[in-house]
Length: 479
Image 1 (cartoon, rainbow, N blue to C red):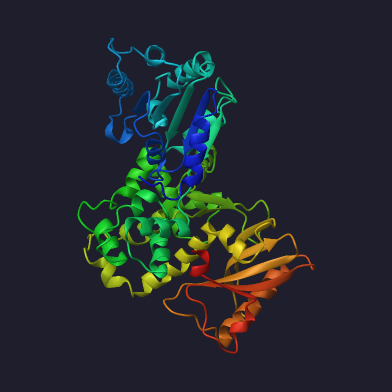
Image 2 (cartoon, rainbow, N blue to C red):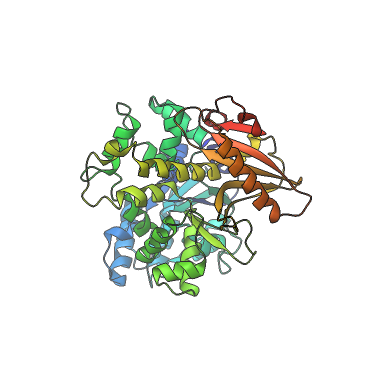
């Protein structure tokens, strides 16, 4: 089966396989990103041992019961690959049995061991991490033909226990593969591979909804339009993605309800919120707990931390950037009646048109590198931000969608317009842009100049005002 959009990661896994030394490989990325698919399709059935943890969503609350269930699952995997002894009593015992199984199969060739959803195995009071450390440090790291691959959807657990571990696993990870969502180009390639006939306009709309997450994109039916697919996937009883929002957080976070409160609060403010504002909206105290929750969300690339342009460097804001979460909270979460025709009935409504506006902003933030390439500044160091300013003495306030602040004394002030046809630049547009430029320059050293950039769907209609932009970027350029 062809691997779309993961060619570099596939090649890296193949190179690691041929390294001739012990390898402890971490494959990380959010739920549904394709970690398991990548590993399985790289090595097919050539695993010496493979195991997947049991989802905590399917388990009870009792700690002893959770340990027992995970150990039972591991025991069944051992048996599947040839072990014939008794059940392990604990994780130290379980990894010792794995050692013995691998030794019995050792013919000198590369042994590939894959433990999927590793964080799920680390239940409370289980001693899993210390046992895993013992297994790798005392045995695995001495086997030149062993390639141990681990992955999991809880990026915060991966970071805390593997990548930033200052105990027994300090500096023991040999390779890291970080899977990101597909880009627009990769999304289009995926649709082509699946035989889904779709316009560039709808490729971008699909990104606004599914965020370039392979599993979500794979659910689309090639016989349906994008609007019909959205209806089938979100607004039908027991549809594939109707409850995905809850599963996303239950499977990857220890405190899913508090996490969802934060995400919901951030979904209501396009420029993001400070810690203080998050506390006010969620009643989660601004202390270690909130910091840990925010760190978890950032590790999963669901939110970002940044300082908005014009703000003090200490005024960190947290902004929700995950397209799927934004779409779900904006439309699906509000649709309590599960109106089966909601999306198709409302695709021309003002609420959907407004959503497309800020969702397109998000798509552009995901593709800053591609935008920089279009501007021929790919090699320059830059900072990116939005800019929201209050009313002046004339009562005029406003927002700038995207600023790219370059180290060559230029600021690219980007207007983002998602339209079904070519955009017509008006005199009113030019006046607004001039006012915004003045606001930007007020917050920059005198050495800076502003360039005006328009990023839109299909370009512009030529008129007296269209030449005001130094550069016009279309979705065709990004694709």
